[in-house]
Length: 328
Image (tube, rainbow, N blue to C red; front, top):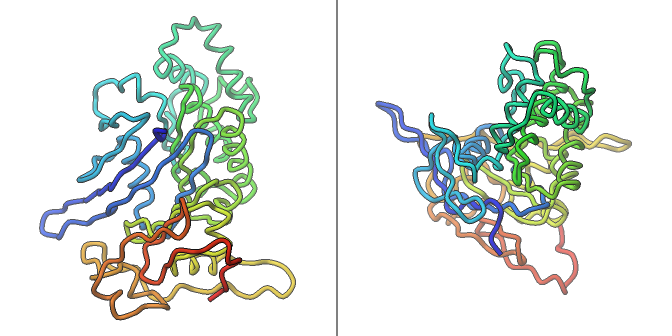
């Protein structure tokens, strides 16, 4: 069965005069199926947003390919987006920057309906559809006549989501959609997106550095470090028994409130210069479990279990009949 969205061996490099090229994404592969949320996590600067932008055609890959419904995703240009790609949408991190400050929000959503679906609606029909979309994201239909600056960050993100839904998408890439919001708005928007996937059956790539949110809403988790996917698997399994040292470090850094809680552990060292990546495994300068071969040999993916991979020399296939893996 063909995946809804498929990234295969994707490379994205940036070139600056007088400096070595920066491989922001290196050989990344992932899939998103209809009706599921795939969480993409990692530290800031690991290449998550670059990968998300490449997935919708906003950034040109230097190698590999992106396919949507089995067909290549072309780079966005000044020409109109092909109709077959208009159901592949993106929700951006900054809702204020993604909305036109000079136009009423209802007009912007109505434009998305007409351009995204090709529907030829009169003003009354468009207004009715806009009202339905605003109410679907938890806003009153009466706000359609207002401008973006009249809303809070959380409300603006709801409007941006309504505009994405106006195209009747099959797949949405949500790039850090909650990071610019306060804690209460973050939970509301995350729950809203999860509910939309459940109701409509669309697929979603949810990009975030907030691992606790990804744990709550994602069906599968993809972990990135320094441009490379280092672990991919079912969220419950990855979080209960992470196979990669970097995944364990990220989980250990999450605060755990409550009686007897301890301070979160800190991942040692600094992220290397992206223009001069380390030899061997990219994580080895910071890895607490580093071996000699890690410094010189780049590890290949290991299938921990069906549908679960880890890119680490220490990772081994697991026999589920043998019971839980002992903690390290």
